[in-house]
Length: 81
Image 1 (cartoon, one colour):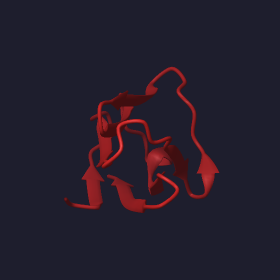
Image 2 (tube, one colour):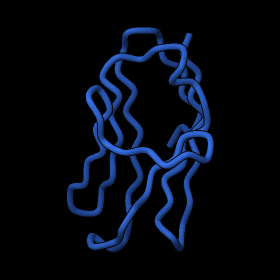
Image 3 (spheres, helix red, strand yellow):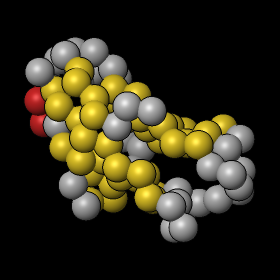
Image 4 (tube, helix red, strand yellow):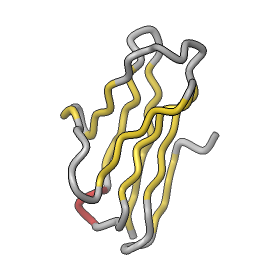
């Protein structure tokens, strides 16, 4: 999986991590600050898949996103161009 994402302004950003436990709790962070679902940013859980979807990328969405599943942490570097 490519953990370096380059996205053009206006395009969606979709990040996902797959877990072994479908009941596992996951927290998403951007630059160390916890994210929550708001308009234009959706956190989704489906089976063992955890996803964060940003509908329309802006320059301010650039940063380091983290999928924290307690026993496993996945980081994504997102650059909006």
